[in-house]
Image 1 (spheres, chains in turn orange, yellow):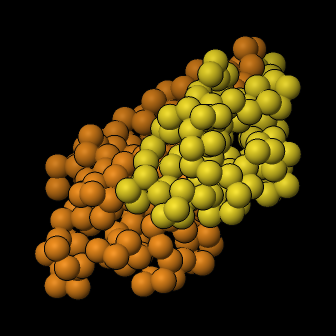
Image 2 (image 1 turned 180 degrees about the vertical axis):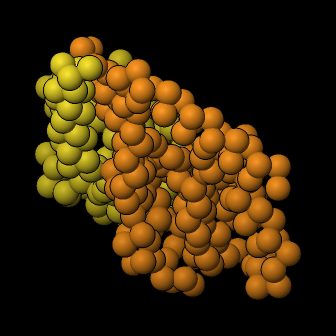
Length: 153
Length: 118
């Protein structure tokens, strides 16, 4: 609940600043777009080609390269990449305009069986606000531990 | 106040034009075409090149997986299109790659790929 209250506060302050800026001849306009570009993006389409219980860890490495993080003797791989979710337009009278991308960090988390085959995968994205950026990934790995479908130790 | 409006509209239009340009520059992680790999790393041949040869030519990998049967090299492409191991003096838009090589238990190269990271 704390996060939601802080998010509301940030949005309200942002809107207030945009209103004040507009009165003074300055336009600040966030333009959301579908997540599209970025560096080293792994697309949903690429992941769809992966077959659980068939695709091996080596197959994945050959497809996506080394992961950003690896856990528990490579039971989990986490790939990170940025995607652009929109653009922030700033226009200032007599000065000019500028545009900057609004980027978010995304995660592809993968779990492998004890024989090195893909068990499951999930995409996550960091929240716009808050410090716990990869909290959802950590939670997913924790749930994988608790799941009875997990690989044999 | 009237004179401010055209300037503001112009600024916003310029920003929108930049936005359109920026949104067309999507880039995804992808495996580089095999012929490009063989052109730039000619000594790599599946089923022929040995692990020893790879280590001698490229040095220590950045990452090891699968009990060293899969190794990954971080590679950097310079202005002239030459690939070298390590990040080098990377500028913001310089291409970076992961060269992934899988070896058989006998130490022969089984498969390899070059993945563009940025």
